Image (cartoon, rainbow, N blue to C red; front, side):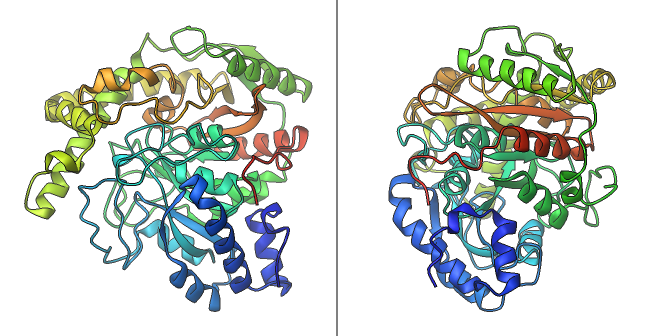
Length: 475
């Protein structure tokens, strides 16, 4: 049977149809494949199609919370046995993975049907999804604009209704930035909440968190119920979960103390639409009964970026060198983009002692932020300081990293902080610009407290619904 309203369902909604026998997992897979084939030429969201695998999975779907739900893995940390993970780079060998990542195995146990992998920038380096290997992913709200990065292919696919939920990860905003640019729900969980095994204990000293992009709050909560929990040997351990996150979605948010800011962390002005979104959201929160006041975390000018950028560059250098060791040779000149070469060269200059010093200073900053959060339950800012940029604003061939990255210098000042501190942080689609581009609002909670964020997100979803807002490319 054809499911003409397939895209109007979230993941749990589709799973309910399968469980009730109203539709089969195989029929859902075909609906998703039809939509990928229809819209992917314009979006360039799916870069590896695994239709045969998905069709086989759909023949006998696992009876999990997301039974039979079409799903996409990210082409970074989305290891699936027998398939390649390229990290968007020509230098990656393309050798098939020998085993599933722990998270991919947990996704499969949740019942999803994997149909492909999504577009990423090279080595997940950029807050926009463009690479020489795959080309640019295009925003379904306006294809001239970026999807955000690095989970931009996932963002485009979910926003356009190709699938209701897709794998994403976040080392500096890579879940939340595409959520903002594409009008989605994007939760970065607490450090250590989801595992990175079996091949990694942590990534960039704990900066990276794994989860998904969704259209509904309940899908994000339900999938975290399916995947969270440390595995043996993990270096980080998130605080215990008191009750299922999906149950939190149906609880009252309570009266929360919320600090908001409508400038960047250094006090500089941001795009008027981003500031307007914060003002509107702060008023809505007050109307809902929360205590809202303007306050900013205690950060020195440029502090978070001063720790984040060199730590990330050092990780990039390690990652490229690790691939070189596997391949038995260094990268050729044309196997890395100019910007990647630039950051790689910076990363190679950072000594072990310097990296440990950066980590120690970041941990001291995290203690200050944790103290600040004793006065507030949640902080609010825009997710991005500007509207979604146009594709092509970056010169990927530029080898001077600072010069090449300059067009985006003021684009993402908010998201790296929570990667450094390990706090949970969620972007919600609560504002749109005058010309129809999504403007996400970023809510961050205390370490280990996704529950408060899910309760608040569900309250805002009910007060200012977004599920009926669809991009130009949809369904």
